[in-house]
Image (cartoon, rainbow, N blue to C red; front, side, top):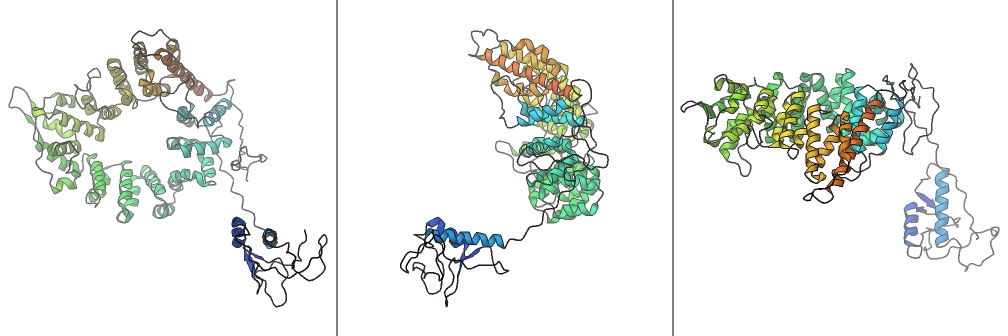
Length: 625
């Protein structure tokens, strides 16, 4: 194909990357008009028939053929008359203009300056993982995309549910994360917020160094910036981050400062309190739970006058957790006018006279005037007053009786359920194990007929107030007496691994449910907890339950096979947890594994750079020194 002669163009400062010139040499008396790149794209998308290329020679329309360029024909072309069609019209002209535009842009391109290498990763003095534990972690992380859930089929362990436990064990034993698994760990933490505390602790300084190089891992920096600034003892940087940082960074910073020095965190919040939005004030105020003390009372008392009802409510809740606060005394005074000891009958009883109104002072102290649907106003107000009053006032009101003796007193006029429920919430808020113990009652008593509240959610909160060993013993007695149908929330607050009596009670209850012919997915929640919380030493005892038994006539169809599969999965998971624990102690040979990622004492790397194993892998820590 013949091509017209093209005027030689040298890139100059006036040449722009978005403009191409006509490919034909300009005739005398004409001017060459630029063809914008956008015009070329439009013609290419619509087609040159619908949108002819505007070559732009002055005095000629786009559809008129241009006069031939002077000079001899180019090699390979044939002589053509003026009326012959030009080869640079239509699609050919479009492609030629695009080619000229590309050449011009490349000719004008200046060499770029190479990006600076990142600083080397900081030294992590913790020992490396044993080889078997390193391989186990890689396997767990590779399987994290597999969906999990209750009622799943198959006897294989659910590895995704074991990742938090593995990370917690590795963190407790002081190992550092393998450098090549840091990207996968950070990806997992980005996808699962429940993993973030474990991952950030395990990843250590190298993980933070790597997170700074990838915007998708910025959550790690937000969660740790405050702690790093506090550790560096840089109050100016702390103040700057508090005033200029993102909301998530500020919440994390306030929590870190409160954990380090509660008064400094309170002062930080007080400095910007009036300028914060209501929803932000609510979150910041909730962060004061960390390190809450009597010194916070003046600030919280002022927050009772906040224009946001939710802020006032949280401030009142925090003040009621301080028994010596002025609000606690005011609420105690109101509650004592409503609850009294009645000695007019045969024995001592509790007399209740609920408040008749909710005045402005009560509302300022956090009492919500409008009850939920289905609740009476007076009982609603009474519950809030008793909940916020210090539990210590009732011992004096009832003649020095203990919490257990007070709870056992009869309550007149049908107010027992309301009064006991309020005492339950007060025991949880004030973390009082004596009152929690009294309101839970004996584990063999059915919740509906025992003291306290029948709500399993509130009973689980009461149980969480007890010491771990007592908590496990109480839950074991409850499971032995009532089975597993109402035990899920109670088991969820028990320490892991479950103590021997609790574990045996759960296994026995599962065995009873299997013999009764119940469907195992009715207990899928408890079975999942057992996989994560049972002592791995129970695996051998459970082995006998993995066989498929003959189904009773009244059993659910296929239940025997489902139970066998569920117990095989439980046994496999317990043995896998035991193996994880052994692997984190040392290598299979009993000798410490060599460090696969050694670091010289001076922090400089002597290892050659290695090709990344994945396309999106960042440089290995220390490889950019």
